[in-house]
Image 1: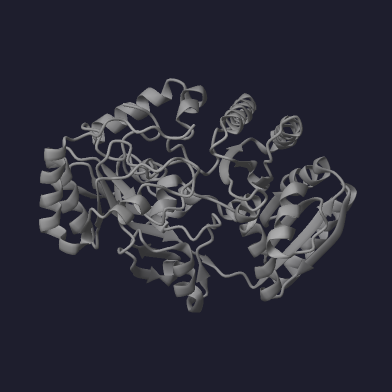
Image 2: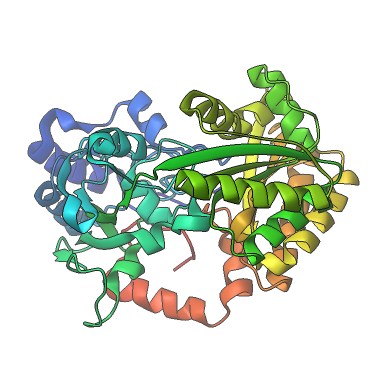
Length: 468
């Protein structure tokens, strides 16, 4: 369901006083213009925009701290904002307040090549980081598809296509600098690769969606660029055959870097949108990292597994331009789905289940879709049990909204029954709030206690993850 705005937190007079104090600090980097507020009141999800009262453009950790202190003194909500690519209504200003844009904090502060880590500000994007690192022989592997900001990826615990080999943001963030709701600046850890000193505050803030503080510096793990990268594509007679190939590949211990599933509907959409000529069948996209001999061996092993499961036209390439074209097709999937119906929008949702239950979850979901009038292509980072649906809906049609809600609820309930999660990587935001208790039970009350301890006035991105 789309986010519903509550009454503004502050009166008009109180808001004016807070804005005046922020204006004195920031000058032209504090805006109340309608267009700027509209831009910052929405993300890439289907949720209705919720406009902030003002937008601040911060340039340093110290400045963020001063902004937060002013907001705290006036009781003004703060909604951290990055590239705006989130998918569950994370950035809507449900109670008005200040959108705190950190995209001008876009410096790569220090590359520690010998230690395989880098320190960045939150406005650095993943593509910017890898372009900067290109001549070092290192790269940052987390690829959620969109050119998201690193701060946003921390906040939503992002993952994406490379997660099956390299993990998610949870495994790749070493330390954070965070401004708390009262303006205090804390450092959650040092750069050591492991520590047993105190609570793991880094993991607490990774995935907190801006509800506990504002992330202003991030220390990330880096990896050596592989000697050889091989990408492959394979189409299947049946969806079940494609999924069995995924499960067998993972269970065989083949160190695949990416293994992505697109159903036949999504392949057809990409063909039409981007002028490809792939067979309109359920298809796997794969990538292998390692030595030249190692990637060839991996590709041959997976080709044999695919052949046993009805896979055809298995083709692989090491050429950079061909690999880029293949993965561009995968990254175009959401736009291709949207193009299936002119004037409609994408309602994207995701779940994640243990790999042993992946076939059951996907096949039961496809059966639901077969019996529905909605169009909903399926795509997944299936190597770790995570997949997405893209409902293509007409927002003005209540029956379509109702049907999407019904199918989404069935999908989530199915995943939870299989010991999975309501969201593998999109995050909770406002879109998945109603499923959190079903997934975590009494643990949600512990989350609320942490939130109240760090943000007693509920100023940090209120109305997200759970209600207070």
